[in-house]
Amino acid sequence: MNESMLCTKTHEYVLEQGDKYEVGITDYAIEQLGDIVFIELPEVGAEFCKNEVFATIESVKAASEIYMPISGKIVEINEEIVDSPELLNDESYENKWFVKIESSADQVEFADLLDYSDYKEEIE
Image 1 (tube, rainbow, N blue to C red):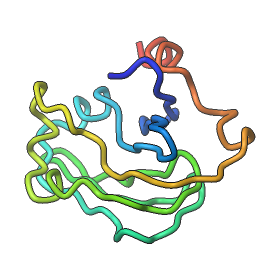
Image 2: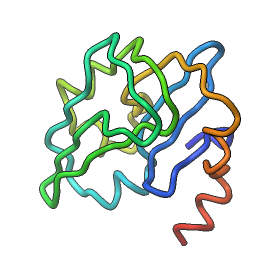
Image 3: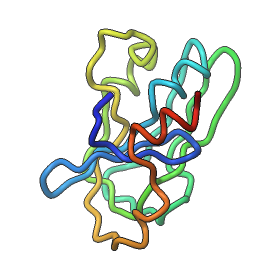
Image 4: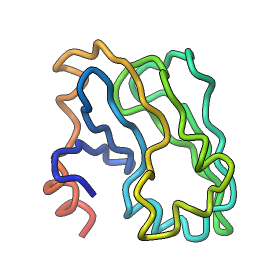
């Protein structure tokens, strides 16, 4: 996981990449879910507010809703994991992001997000 990403207490992350943000779930969340068998992502162009459900993920153990860590508009989805959700379980697989968004979120939206190191302490 990237040390510069910010995490939610519900195990989503957001990572700034130039003028876009990458959004996904943490390795801890993937580990807790177990074998992932299905993922449903929104369409490009869809807009979400902070804390709104934007994706659904299913594993052999459970189905989970995934929440948007900051408000934004979907500009890209990771088709690879939609077609092969089991890739998320592969530790060597790099592209674990779900969506990329454009966001004009202000600092208030970032205020409750945890630095990755604080997130790791929180889950231990």
